[in-house]
Length: 99
Ligand code: H2B
Image (cartoon, rainbow, N blue to C red; front, side, top):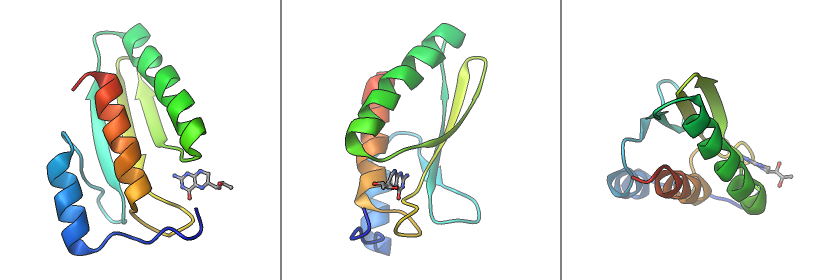
């Protein structure tokens, strides 16, 4: 993780275009998306599946769950900003959410 390089402006533009609903986080080098599910069970199921992927990737989300919504922020702490690992995890989360 320590060798990860932060994305260039061009790379982050391309990355955001390839994702669904992710925006640049206000005030820091990260991306954020708010997922909304039908109910708490669906939200928690999503988080459970993502947790297994995150652990396998050794890359972990910052997230906040309220009832049926999950607000996610992705950033690579070891690199001090956005890297391809965040893009990979964002894509996995989009796929798991069924978008
Ligand atoms: N998750 C995220 N989001 N950023 C990191 O830099 C990071 C991580 N580093 N998960 C990993 C764990 C690192 O601490 C371990 C030691 O590989």
